[in-house]
Image 1 (cartoon, rainbow, N blue to C red):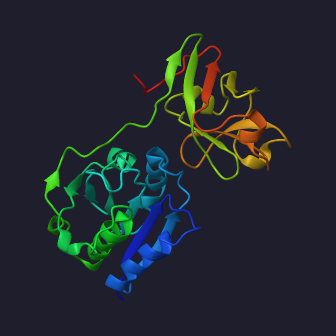
Image 2 (cartoon, rainbow, N blue to C red):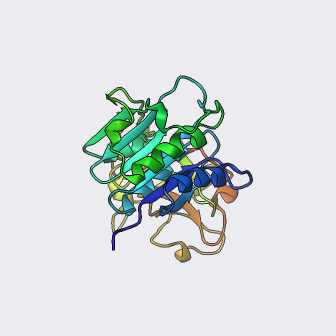
Length: 276
């Protein structure tokens, strides 16, 4: 029995309007046996980096041949391009605004095509809803088996950016930033074990993490290890240092959010950084 085709959805549309339901309707009309999987519709509005983080964390867990529709598109209706991007195992349909940047960084081989084959579009095309009229039909036809090269010519000048990297600072300090706050109030920083290996060793070097109005001196291996009200560091499933609290919102406790500075000072060790 052959596997049903899969299309995933990652958007900033939320669930209060008709947008998500509408694009699902367009997809199912083209390929009725498709399996649609919602990765996330709560990407921060217009936040391309948040969208890039979201799809990069999820896509590799899906079967070969999955089509990932990613629409965080503040430039909808402008001259920004639409893309079909194919790696060895997956296809992606997205605006060319950098939202696939962390996918690009993870894949050794990929081909990006500028979508120009208008006969695959739903007509008429609205200048405010390309997800419905361009991206959803293209994703559906990809899942249906249309070859990626049918949608447009290959390009190499697609937009990409690097996620913010922690930087060394004075006083044996590594200066990072909060990339996002998850729904539990955990602060996801951009500091990885490669940036500060001494912090994540079995017996960590003495350290101090300053974020918001708190200094943090404890690293835990799971959320339940922390005492009630205690804020601590933890290596989260995304592969980054998180600032967390046991059954509480670290963001509220420390008074910090996305974009806040995170200063890690390691005593007696030099903080490594892959930033330049």
